[in-house]
Structure formats: C-alpha cells, structure tokens
Length: 253
Length: 253
DNA sequence: GTCGTCAAAATACTATACGAAATAGTATTT
DNA sequence: AAATACTATTTCGTATAGTATTTTGACGAC
Image (cartoon, each protein chain N blue to C red):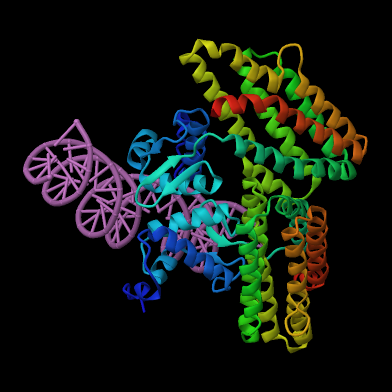
C-alpha cells in the first residue's frame, strides 16, 4: 500500500512535516514497530510514511541527539538498543541526584497554579484505574512521566527540567516493558516474570503503590514541607529502582 | 582498484558532510560569526559553506536539539540568545547537583588510567599559561571544559556525563565573554568591566585561581578522598558562580 | 499621519531524481 | 584456502522544481 494519500487520515496535519515525522518515528520506536537495534532505512521509512526523504532525515538527526537513534557514518541509522543494566542503574542514580532536589524546591515555590496542576495530574492517575489492564500500562507510564516532569517544572530550574526530559526515562522503561512482553509470547515460562514486571513497577490492581507514593510527594509539596518532599521523592525513586531492577537484569542476561 | 586521489588541500575531509557542517556551524555560533538571536538562512549558509541544503538541514536539526539553534515553524532557524541571568543561575545550580557527586564517585573509582588523564589535563592547563592573553581565554575555557567533562566520565555514570555535556556550559560562558568583549569595542567605559569578567573567572596572570582549585580537586580525587573531592568541587563551582555572576548580570541589564 | 488591505517577493518546506562513494556480499583467480 | 576482483546495495550529497507560508511594501481610506 504505497499510496501516499494515507497519512492524511492519521491525524491533524501540522504544517511542518518534519515534526510530524519526528513524532511518528518516535512512536514507532516506542512501540517496537521498529525493534531495538534494528536498522532504519531512510527510503523505506519515507515510503512507509508517505513523505520524502528530507523530513525523514531531519527527524532522524533529531532523534539521534535524543539518544533514540544511533548513526554510523556511511552505514546508516539504527535504533538504539534496550538499556543495559548499567545504563539502567546510571539513569536512576542520575534521577536521585536531581529529582529530590526538584521536589524540595517545588515545596518552597509552590503556588495555587502548581497545586491545581498537581491535583489535576493525580486525578488523571485515578481515572486511569478504570481502564482495562492493557490500557493501564500506557496510561500509568504517561501519568508517571507527566508527574515527574511537572515537579521539575515547578522547581523552576530550566536546566534541571531539560536534562530530566532528555533522559526519556519513561520511554526507555516502556521499551523494556514491551521487550518483556514479547519475550512472554515466545516463552510461556516467563509468564510470571512479566506479570511481576508490571505489577511490581506500577502496582495496578489493589496495591497502587505508585499512586500512594505520588500522593505523598504531592502532599508534602503542597504543604510547603521541603524536606519531606525531598525524602518522599528520594524514597519513591529508590523504591522504583528496587522493584524494577530485577526485571531489568532478567531482560539483559 | 583505481588508486584513490586524496583531496589533500582541503584537509582531513570526513566523508560525512553533515558532521563537518555541524561542527562548522557550531563554531560560527561560538565565535559570534552568527550573532546570538540572529536568523539563519539555509540558502545563504549552504552557499557560504559550499554544500547543499541537505547537510545544513541535518546540522541545524541537531543543533536545535543541542539548544544552540531555535526553530520556528515556517519562519526558519535562528541562533539562541545569550543566557539570561536566570538561565545562568539555573545552569550553575544544576552543576552543583551533579558535579560534586561526580567528583565524589571519581575519588572512589580512580585508577592509574584516570590519574594519568587528570595529570595530562592539568599539564595542558599549565602550558596554556605561556600563550598570549587572547589565546589564553580560549585555551583556558577549553581546559575547563575538558577537566570537568573528564571528571564526569571518571565517575562512570553515563547519564551524568551526557547531561553535563549537553548543557554546553562552557560554550555558553564563552559566548557571554565574547558579548562582553564586543560591547567593549562599542563602549570604552566598559573596559574595566570586561577585564574583570575575564580575570575574575579565569584568573589569568598572577592569580590562576581556577588552576589552583582544579589542582585541589584533582589531588583529592587521586588520593581517594571522596568527601574532600566533593566539597572541593562544590567550592569550585560556587566560586565560579560568585565570580562570574556580576558580569552576567551586567550583560543582561 | 495612522491604520488596514492586498498583491508581490522572499523564504521555508517538500518532492523527486540522479550520481558518487563506500560497504557488503559473491565470484574468480592464484 | 587466501587474496583479489567484481557486482549489488546502500548511504550520502547534489540539483532542481514546485508548493505553502511569511514578509514586505505600496496603495488607499479614514
């Protein structure tokens, strides 16, 4: 179906194809439509998305800076591989350096607008509980990403916000999750492991540990309790690390 | 196979023009050949560098991710403006979050290779003292950038290293310095101020405070004194901030 | 003189085709 | 079997044409 009219149907066409293409390719990487480590052929991609090479090239150049695409001179582009255990640990260590500080600052600077934003975000998390399990994963990860990002923004430090966003940590975690899921399809013995991965990290169903921890962070921030917010954030990230770490190890073995 | 004719005249031509172009444009921004906030015309740039639009577009897309170029849809690219005082402070605050930690980790992990690298870097700083004053600025900033980057690398945390490099802090500081210098040309009354800017921050001539502080950090790391390395780095960044801050304010008023 | 309107020029963006050069794979010769 | 030569594929860059959007600047109304 190399009919070029198709992409129009997929959504509201922004006037800049490069940006659209960027989002589309990002989505394709996120959903493993392009597998981790797979080669990315510009011509093929252009044909598939119904655009010319120019926007593809710009999108790939940006994705390379984002660390989602790797470029080898004269050999072309390919998606980056899944996080190694070391990269995974490094990432969480990095988050431990900046996010507790961001929470602390947020508690000092919080105002009515910030409180409203935090309220809205927590509300969206709770409504996500009503979704089916498969939709919950996506919804939870998106909430998690927005929540943490929101706090870095409330902290008011541009450098911190930017560096956090650039880690694309939730994107990488989602890729790990997807990889686990597809392993499941090949190997039924992994069944319990993959369920664990999801339940441990996002605690859907009865636990909802993530929501509880987020709630604690939010309360401390809104109460102006800077030290409390800091330690709450610290504990939350540490607990995420502890819960997710065995799964990451399993996948990389 | 026909013998390949190397174009010796043009230098070590990398076969990937995009990368070359990226470096060239970056250099042009750094040196204010393209002024902060100025528009970047793709056609003009392509003509000037003697390449076609394709590599220019890829380079600009990457520079946009780097935060050195801003893109407005359908209106084109332009260089980012100089750091505001807030951005300047945010940047240093961010560095205070990650670099002291990096120094601490480095002290724990340091080995013979790391020591040799630190030695070599400090040596290059001392030989830079023999250069003329105008060359010293460039040489010092480059040393400073390499020194701090080296420590993040020795710390072993990829996320920290990457996020530090992406701040391009030394590049931004150099742009501030250049802006001060060009103000000097227009306004002789600024003379003292600009000299201050340079001497305060890099302490060339007799002081060489930067080198002393770097030496202290290096010693602590090589001695395996993790707490000492941490506080030394903390003091160094704080002292940079204190010294440079009045200058940054002056430029942004 | 100020303001809005509208056509024309400039520029950004996309499409497409072509060619040079490098890589990778295959076949041939020594 | 190893080295070489050839072919195919792919990347990378160029050139050019066409469309869409912004900017400019002139003109006229108030």
